[in-house]
Each structure stands twice: as C-alpha cells, then as structure tokens.
Amino acid sequence: MTNNGFDVKGRVALVTGGGTGVGKAISRGLSAEGWRVVIAGRRKDVLEQAASELSGETGNEVGWIATDIGDPKQVRALFDELEASFGRLDLLVNNAGISNSPVPLEEIGYEEWSNVVAANLTGAFLCTQQAFRLMKSQTPRGGRIVNNGSISATTPRPNSAPYTATKHAITGLTKSSALDGRPFDIACGQIDIGNAASDMTAKMSGGVPQANGEIASEPTIDPAHVAQAVVYMAGLPLDANVLTMTVMATKMPFVGRG
Image (cartoon, rainbow, N blue to C red):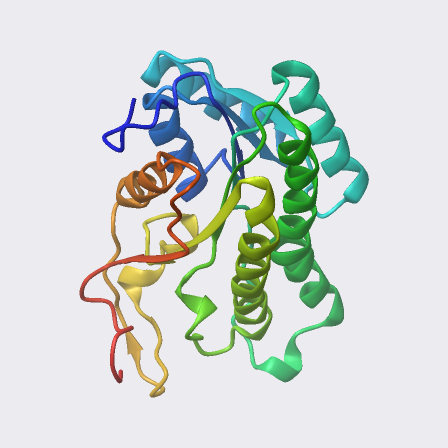
C-alpha cells in the first residue's frame, strides 16, 4: 500500500520502453511498491535482461513482451496477451520514445520524421486506445494512464522539430484522454521530465547547444526521482489525478531566459 492509502499490491502495470533508462527506473519503482509490472519494447534481449534484473532487485516478478508500439497489430497483440495473462490493466505508462538527429530542420528526412512520430506519438495513441478498450470492459472498470511528455512538451531545444512536435502533441493526447476517460473512471496525466540521466542525456555534461547559440553543459538528475513521481501519480485513487507534473534538474537552463 502506498502512502496515498490506495492498495496497489497485485495491480497490473504496463511500461513501454521499460527495458532501459527512465522506463526501467519507473518499472523498478512500481515493482518495489507491489505492482505486477510488464515491460514492453522492441529488443527482446534488452527486455529479458531488464526483467530478470528488476525481478531480482524487487522480489516481484517483472514480465516482458517484445512489441513495436508503432505497429497497430503488434500493439493489439500486446494488450490481448496482457488481458489473457492478467485479466485486466490498471496502469499504462506511455514512456517509449526516440529523439531525432540534431541537425537543421531542413535537413531532417521524411523517414526520420516518420520514425519519431511513430515511436513518440502514434505508439502512445495506439497503446492508449487499447488501454481504453480494456479498462472500460474490465471489472472493476477504469485505470490510469501516465504519459512521458518531456519538458519539450512546452519548450523546444534547438534542432529538435520532430521530437518537440510529438511531445507537444502528447499534451493534447493527455488532455483528450483525461476528458474522454472521465465517464469510465480512466484517469490520465503527464510527467514532463528535464534531464533525467540516461543514454539520451549522456552528452549533457560535455555540452549541448543552447537557444542563444552557445554550447553549455547541463546538470542531470537520477531517474529514480522520476520513478518516485510516477509511483505517487499511480498510487492515487481514481477520483484524484495529477494532470501535469514537471520533474527536472534544478539548475538546468529551462526556467526563464537562457
């Protein structure tokens, strides 16, 4: 039972992109709280290793299902397998995503644009769609969806049009899902993350382009802090919701100018 007084033990959570980075940290946090966690991603070897590692750390079995979330057929198969194995889904964390090459906007090819949109936006929509289907029909009905928005959901970095566009769109998906889910006890919220340490942010300490044209190093935070925030959001009863939350490195150049 979490500090919120909502009993989560035995409840089922799906975390996309759960085999590495922030997704893995979120999966660890949820499993440690007693959630029955399933992680999804494209690479079987990464998922299998992560699931084994997390199961050993938390003492609760973590499952895995290899899935390309940009493929509607694979997403449907993922949720069919979840329903067959567990009978329900209580939490979906739409975490999977990729960034684009840091090049001028006019140099980004259509294929790269399409890949980023498929991973970051279409995948989140397809998973949300299937989660709605299951959460509406299960007993007791309802559940929660948490989307990884990134601080790029409000403020872009230089040369990041595809990534930023998808993260702005995630905010619209979050709000629409929160609205459409209300009659069915489905709560939806978004966590905007700033510089959680991962492979994606490994270059931060060496310097990254800033809006004023300079190159500057940026601080990062332990992804465990993000996991704690998601655990809090997930542990609320369904009559309460965190619509948006920002978790960021305190000294990163995000608030204000520069």
